[in-house]
Image (cartoon, rainbow, N blue to C red; front, side, top):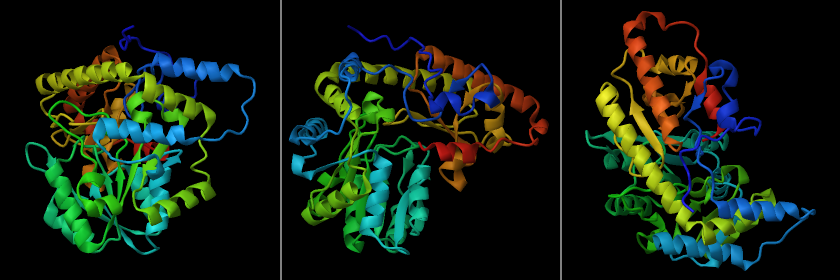
Amino acid sequence: MKQNFNERIDRSNTEAAKWERYGKEAGSRLIPMWLADMELPCSSAVREALIRRAEHPIYGYTDRDASYYRLFAEWFHEQHNYQVTEEDVILSTGVMYSAACAIRLFSREGDGVTVLSPAYAPFIHAVRHGRRRLYRSELRDTGSRFEIDFCDLEEKLKKARLFLLCNPHNPTGRVFTEEELERIAGLCEKYGVTIISDEIHCDITYPGAHFTPIMNVNPWTRENTIACVSPTKTFNLAGLKISAVFIKNRKMNELFRKEAAAVGISSINLFAMCAVKAAYTKSSGWRQEAMDYLAGNRQAAAVFLRERLPEIAFYQPEGTYFYWLDCSGIKDAPSLGEGFLKQGLILSPGAEFAESSQSFYRMNFACPAGMLEEGLNTMEMVIRNWNKNSNIHHSAQIDLQTQVFAAGN
């Protein structure tokens, strides 16, 4: 049966962070388009699997047999030609926990970690909290898309022990080409830099873009990449806390496996495992319908922005369900978030991702089309009033950056 993604689902009284975090500031008219989960129902197969398991009255300790590791290996090989085996797979409660664990294991305090900027804020926090040195290599706006400045990247990698890659890229939506990944791999090999690759959005790409795992680029990356993947973005399962790590290098794999067990991130709850099995074995049709719907929202947003808000610069994302909106053409753009919030619209402020991105906002379009339309209309209304009354926007501001950072992604 075809899924109805147009239905707006009431998430009140479910402790949904996306809806409850700003309830007091936004009032009853809330349009949350910030946190990275979907406002779309998960597949019926997943829901039925969870209900069946919940009906059993005992929720005791459980073991993970080889079939769960095989699930991850087979899905990612079939979808993206990863060429990993179940022995390469390590379970984890989340990509960020895996990345933080890899930073601790494969670098020491004071070592450098390079990221492409703007960057997902929890990555920055993990680097700094781990007392590593952060090196940002800024993506360049070429007038057609954001691209890597390879001269700058090389300078930053010279000083680094790790490179933290995000592909597809959050927040710009870039899906890096095979040629770009080959150049990254060559630089990392040249300077002996281990790659931690966040590939959580790899299943969410649009026509014209092709995701390539950097692990597959050459023999060196096969042995020097920690790839972090998850079904949570693809199938809208973020609250269930389930992901995996792929490591081909046997020594690195064993080190990570032992550390993951020691700190508990490989202890996956029984409901998450029920969900991932139903997602990977019974929800391919749902996934295709969801991708078609996201592609429609992506196009609808592009048309609206071009026709109604030409002062906002943007590129259609090649992957993810985010628009990265450049509002620098609007006076006092870093304060726009306050104006949006007063009308119930919540976007992720660009300052969360980079100091240089204070005039940007990230918009999540994984929602019913009616909600997207309402959000865009609200954005237009706020900006029109903002342009008319730009001199009144210097009042005390709500610290959105701090609040959103604390929320995670």
